Image (cartoon, helix red, strand yellow):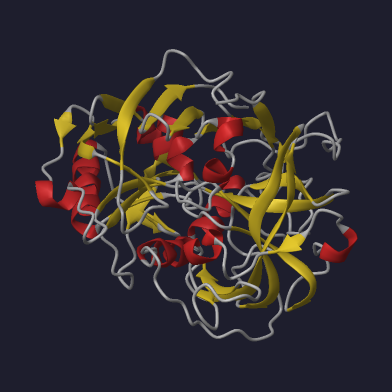
Length: 435
């Protein structure tokens, strides 16, 4: 199996009002990943007034994300209606510079570890933004026929008769309340200096709702249509990322594709396979400690159950870690037992306290099979710039979402190297300063 030169994707995030000495954005030749609040973001999002307001705003979209994750079941028919609508990018996420077609057309595509099929808005799209992929200018573009195996692997596909000739159309929802209609297509995908030929993706012709990423999505899930599955000979089913902190004007991190350049000494835990939710990266979370206290949690609340989808996943698109209600309540109550109150709320956070007591705040330890992760304090607490408050930076799954998932989100993954090794069914975590 051929090994590709590891691709480095430099991540940049703009979340505060601080200004650094440098002012330039990466060139189009650099493989850069930029969240929507970054100065170099192409989406014209307003500059946030403070980094905690950025987190609060992004976390307010988590209920939609949890609803989406809860709906991910294998080959579930999707007949969501499609209608025209104003496209607004309102879910905080990381985007990567990718080029599609020959010659390459630059698109800023969302990276999503819980999705497989890639998709981009195409020329003539109803409800899309002005930046679209133009298939008729690419010499390597082609639509995919209903008779090919890929058509049966994409969710929501609609062919007149299984295996019959004709273009493969599909209809999917994303973000909980949005949907799109697309044609399954093939073209060259360029990531940095690497080229994935004949890459299967959706060419979007209509969108409905406000949660569809405006320039498309690159699925890093573990299903058959994901980037990893389509580039197995190139990347051997391995990638890792290091997400930077939310505390600076600019943030720099990295995404590495392929086994070369990955950390050698890294603690790992097995990845679990769920045939009903094949896209998701499940891990076995066995317990949670607050300081030196192992929080009493009923084992069935943590247990992995492929039939119901219960268990714990690692996800790049959720902002703050969410536990099912009984687990979060137990963590919160033990945390409050060890920190001086009174406690107030701030956005999604219900355990905020005077930051003068932060020095005695206990660490949160996540116990996985074969590995314990002690969250750095900056991954456990969020601070308010408007008042001297610190808040426990996690929450319960939304009450209106019938979720059995515990989701380890991107705020808790910052300044850690997260290794996804699907070839060996393992997930690794190592401390790393990403900035």
